[in-house]
Image 1 (cartoon, rainbow, N blue to C red):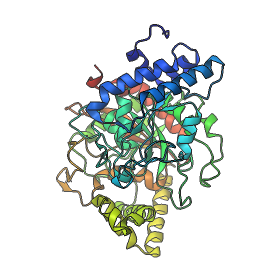
Image 2 (cartoon, rainbow, N blue to C red; image 1 turned 90 degrees about the horizontal axis):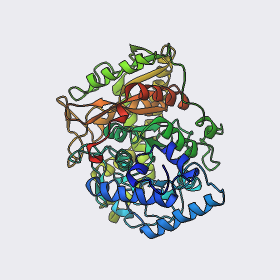
Image 3 (spheres, rainbow, N blue to C red; image 1 turned 180 degrees about the vertical axis):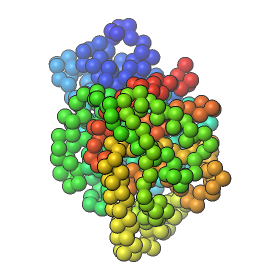
Image 4 (cartoon, one colour; image 1 turned 180 degrees about the horizontal axis):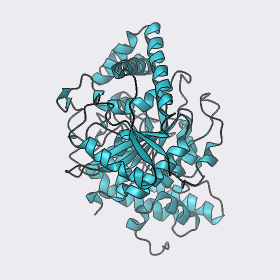
Length: 485
């Protein structure tokens, strides 16, 4: 490919590793890359509404020219030099609007970067907009009163998942080469599963998440990468990861170099524990469990053994502890919006529900829930004495109607909260384990299905290595949306 002949469709179809290489070899200019992606956004975004709050194109082109000038002087800012990026509309970006999907912050321009966005900017990325997210990231369906609904990359009548829904759709439709996201209750994993891409819930501390007003209690939400393949995922993670002195729980180990290591690994004899639907505890949409079970054959292809794994734990007690800790965390950061009559009127019902639950909790309530969380971690640690990795479905439903706020029933069972339908993501979150959402096939309606690969504590690179081998064996990620044709 040369800069004189490369059509925009060729540029946006490159994987991120190849794109970075092409930019640094001067085979394609940063201006051409930016223009190609802007064309792709113009073509695809009106249908799906994944990228919002875009700056004026002229300002972006000026930045791309500056990146080309740097390269002409043999100066590269990093592996993302000239990469179009659109940070999730929850973490702040200096000079851009950050709404958190809430009318409370509509039009608000932030003045600082989050820790991760600062690293992505410093690595040479050009911020072309924000990816859409639900209000305060609540619920795994990306809609809000500020920007509206983000629609699924494979069927615009369906939802995109969330809360990193805009990121997942933008990736699937080649509007971004890689994308960032965050995950508390599956916010990287659900949109990855719903849009046939990869989303990686990193170990707490692997990627600095913040800074914020509170940096010790918050251990549920993590920042991580999304991509169309594992080498691209590792590329972005090598920029995101590493210690930040403002965040004392972030890790000092050299994560950047770690994620530059080879992804190829001998996997013969690796033991996979299949959690399935947790012994019939999780209601799952008809057919989804069978699709993910079929995908297990690809682990066998790469030399793994697969056996059923059953945790010995009261899973309703685990769910109750999750409700307590989630409401405690959310209300702690957002109760001030509830205490103002003006801003309370702008909160969606789910946010009010979480805050009111949190305000009603006592200190002993929170401590008791933390003890349950600890016991759950120890139970999974016991399972990891038998298995090297655990695998289970990434979602209990396939992408549902975009106008439906959340599924009210699954397999005839009524969902008693707005997020009970997402219970399948709780095991990894509550144990603080690195978890990769990976494509696992399609329903008869052509909708993507995903599975989760869960590793032992702080084994982020190992999870990526297993995911890479699985991806090469399965080929599911190569199946692209018909919207790209």
